[in-house]
Each structure stands twice: as structure tokens, then as C-alpha cells.
Length: 346
Image (cartoon, rainbow, N blue to C red; front, side, top):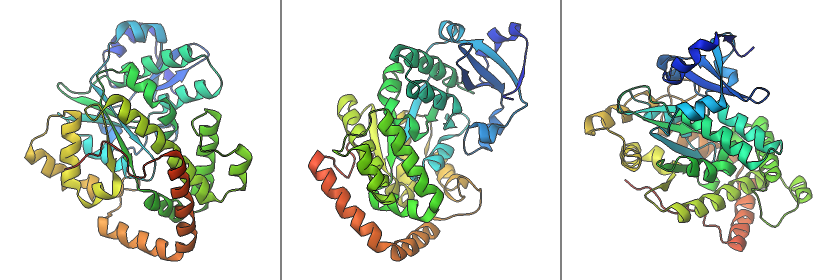
């Protein structure tokens, strides 16, 4: 169950109340399912997915037509990412009352991806995405913005999302390829399987064009597949950076962000146009977002991360080195810059 449905008369009031959070798109009835979710509950969840939100919450369904008619474009921005790059950490850091609300991987946007992958017409996908973004863009507090971090399943739809929200700015946060590959190895077999599932979806959507056939990817190693997905994302976001320019879309290197959190936060806040003074930024940088693991909540420092990554790099160095050489050759063939353009600097 997704929740206990409330009577229809509440729907109009729910559109004006961000506490009625847009959790799912119900394709069979062309409605959005809103659930009762406080701001405090948001802060306790690393991801706004069905796994973490559970079931049994008060809920109500609102027709898509009512969402489009009753809501305008809110003060919404995007944090796109390549995975394993501290995106959940940055979303938490940006989530501050009076400044912004950070939404981490809303399930409702994954539902939009599902429409696309099931072959629905582009206008159907765009209509559902438009309504979802209007619902997600309702700020919790006066003067606040909303920063949405979609799952990287949404990266093939990032151009559409930017077009639907013409006032939105975006960051593309990425781990350099070597760091990304170390993360895949460090997370074990389930992550090696996940990068294959991700590339499978990207291939289904025509997002990957690196000169290989689907059969070729089947013959490649896990880390080659991981690198192919990384290269496809970099190629796409380089195109977006050129299309929209640095005022609208910028990129940020995760290794730099973790090493220099104060500079990274200051630059991100300026890019998004958020209201935060020096004292607020200092409080954020010295707070739990940068000192605790974004998913487990356990204490975690940049030095610990460096030590763990060094150990993995030493153990799997030969495999990583071979894939790095291969990936650099693929990147050179297709003109993909390993360092993303429009870099955000402190």
C-alpha cells in the first residue's frame, strides 16, 4: 500500500501545502499521490524513495490536470550527479530552513523515467514531468528555494527537466573517473551489478553512443561498463553546459568539494542564488553534513575517505589502471573531456 487515501475535497488545499509531498505518479488514473510528510521527516531520510518512505501514511490522489492548472513553476533548481560523488551529502548541506529545501532522489521522478522506458509518447512523459516538478517546487518556507537531486536514472531526461523549469539552475556533480571506479570496487558485487543495470537502462533510452554494440558491453568487464556509463554522462553534460552556459549549468568535482567544503558550499550557494551569509555557510560546513556519513549517519571524515580509497586503490590497482587507459582512449576518440566544463570554483 502507498498510503491511506483521504477524501477528494482535501485536494485543493493540499496543492498549497508542501507538507503534502508528491510521492508517486499513478499512471492508471493519471493522478499524483501525495503523502503527509513533514520537513523533519524529510531530514531523516537519505532518499525519498518507497524503500524509506514506507507505507500507511495518509495519502490522497490529485489529477494531473489539477496539478498543472493549480501550480506555477516554483523556485526550483537541480543537482544532477554521476553517482558515488557525495551528492546526498551536498543535498543535505543545502537543506537549511530559510535557505533551501533539499529533496534527495524523489520516487515520483523515477516514475517519470518508467513512462519513458515503457515507450510512452514524449508529450506524455513531458506532461507528467512538468506536473511532478511543479509539485516538488513548492517551498516549505518563505524565501526558500527547492534543490532537487534526481536519481541519475533521470540524467537522460535532464535537458527536458531544464526546459520545463526555465528559471532553474543546475549543478552536475561528478567524481573523477578513477575515484568513481574505486567507489564501484569498494562497494562490492552489488555495485558491480548496479553499474550494469544502469548502463542497460541508458542503452534502452539511446543515451549511450560510444561505438559499441550491446553485445560488446556484455563482453566487457564490470569496470569497463562502469566507465562507459560515466563517459556517457560526461558527454551529455558537456553538451548541456555548452547549450545553457555557465550561468545556468555548472559542474563540480567531488574530490575538490570534499577537500575544500567551504569553497564548494560558497560557490554552490552563489550559483543557485540562495540566501546564506558567511555565518550560515560556516555553520553548514562545520555541521553534520560534512562530518557524518550521508546514508548511515555515522561519523565520517575526509581523511577516513582518503584512507579507505587508498586501500582499495592499492588492492585493485591493476584492474583500475587498465580500465583508465581504455576509457581515456574511448574519450579521446569521441572528444569527451575527462574534466567537465563550466567548472564551479571557490
